[in-house]
Amino acid sequence: MKMRWHESARTVGFMGLLTLILISSVSALHLATAERVQRNAELYLRRAVLEAAGLAPPEAPAEVHALFQQTVTAVSTAPDGAPDRFLVRAPDGGGDDVLVFKRSGRGLWGLIDAVVAYRPETGVFGQIRLLAHNETPGLGARIEEPWFQRQTEGKTGPFVLQPEGSHSTAPTEIDAITGATITSAAVRDMLNAVSRDARQSKEPPTHE
Picture 1 (cartoon, helix red, strand yellow):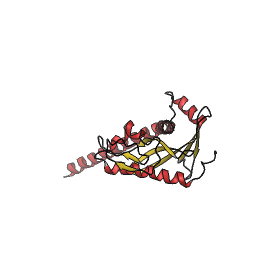
Picture 2 (spheres, helix red, strand yellow):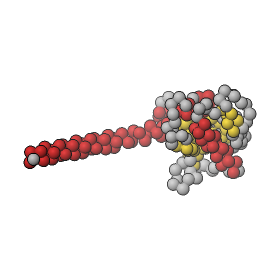
Picture 3 (tube, helix red, strand yellow):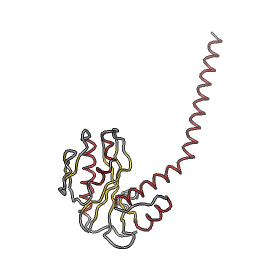
Picture 4 (cartoon, one colour):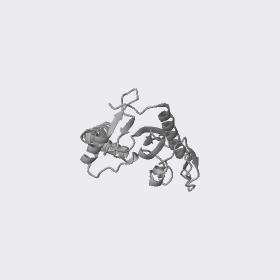
């Protein structure tokens, strides 16, 4: 009986030590990579903002950051002060300014994060770029496909969904993803929120 108790104690002690080692290792890895993860997320956001506004970001990360600093002013209307829109100017000084809104909507399996371009001078949308989502591969995750992200270009909204393959040129219609009604509706609602917010703002945000 006493031997069994000692064996149980050793087993519990070994498991506790192993758990402590694993937790420490995971924590150390998280701390070691947190800065790199943050840098990559910032780079991804900046690329998405530039692409949505119609600018082709360069390949080199340093050049992406340089172009972003040259052309983009981050603006915050959120209580926490985090940037939620970006005023993008043409690098050569020509063309209209583009507002790129950062928005989230609730999809089937969680939040969908995206940036959406809107041209205040003409009242038309640019493109949308997805930042993060947890939608189903082969269904809702198809919102990442280029045709879906560029179909808002030149349209005015507010948007209604049409069946996939409609290829509607109407200024208020976009194609949904077949079999992904909730995901498609979430993107539509994000776009319509941008349309509403942009039209309520009579002037573009001032540069900071």
